[in-house]
Structures are given as C-alpha cells and as structure tokens.
Amino acid sequence: MDNWREHAACRTEDPDLFFPIGTTGPAALQTEQAKAVCRTCPVLEQCLRWALDTGQTLGVWGGTSELERRALKRREAVRRRSA
Image (cartoon, rainbow, N blue to C red; front, side, top):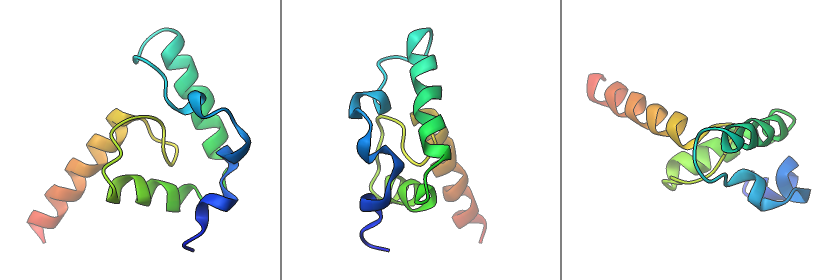
C-alpha cells in the first residue's frame, strides 16, 4: 500500500503531538498521547516500516518513540549479522 499515509489515524491530528521535545515530564505524556493515536491506526505497521527504512530519528512513528526505533534497528542489524 503505497498510499498508506492517506489512511493514517494521525492525518487529522496536530503534527506537533508526534514530535515531543525531550523524554521526561510533559514530553513523556505527549509521547504516550501520540502512541494512543497510533494504536487506533490501520496503517501502523506500514508507518513503522517506513520510519525504519527511511531512518526517521525524531518523533513518534508507527507507535514507537525515537529510543524504541533505535533499539529495533539494533535488533534488526544483529539478526542480519546472525543470518
């Protein structure tokens, strides 16, 4: 589905919600609010795959934070090396 963004739950949300500044306090709450939107999204998997494939280092994408995506990328790299 190349046009996955057209079906994204975040399409009608304020984009700033998905780009909290920091990782604690209000930013942590904002991250959780963004992830709540992601949990309702029919294209969550496509969004996450796009974020990983294109190296998105900022914001919430596919229901994951910046730190979570970094960890996923590390696990993918380890898996590839082990294969």
